[in-house]
Image (cartoon, rainbow, N blue to C red; front, side, top):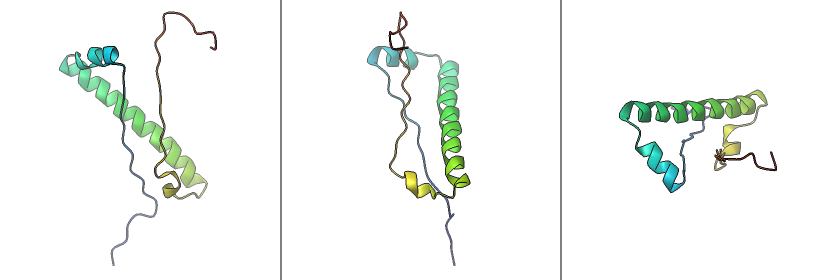
Length: 84
């Protein structure tokens, strides 16, 4: 008999940047581009682990978050926004 893992969820990291910022990121030399990709993937893994650890610690099946998303936005500004 084959059994699957009791608690399993797949996650994927994506980023979306403004066209100007995306052109800067894609112009990185290969070494810097690789470092940026590792940072995005490492951050993704760390956050996903924090969330799934919390579910596991509270006995909640991972399927409870199937289809849910987490979005992180970094906004660069020349001045401190009023709401900060």
